[in-house]
Image (cartoon, rainbow, N blue to C red; front, side, top):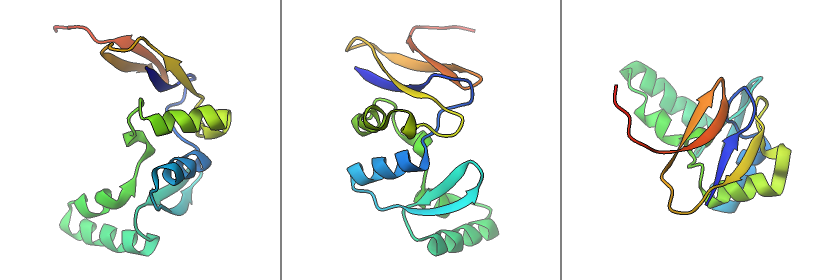
Length: 131
């Protein structure tokens, strides 16, 4: 089984090009809004529609409408075959500004989880814990 992790301090993120490649392969139409130095924000509706929904959400103090159309690469399953394909095809160009994404292969049938320290991630086999 293959899993994508971030292999440096900083945190998991896809570059704008990585997000767009992922969406292209998946057949997802995305609209981008370059709003900050960390990259673009992506929506499944035009930016104007997202802004309208966000303003409505602010009035209601409930962000369900705008969250529903916001595309977050962090919500992609790390064993998603398309994510793996993007990272393998694009190499370092798939990584966001403070990331170094890599594909790690583990044995099939393992229950796994990702652990991170300051953004650097490792894969661990799940086990029981008590506190």
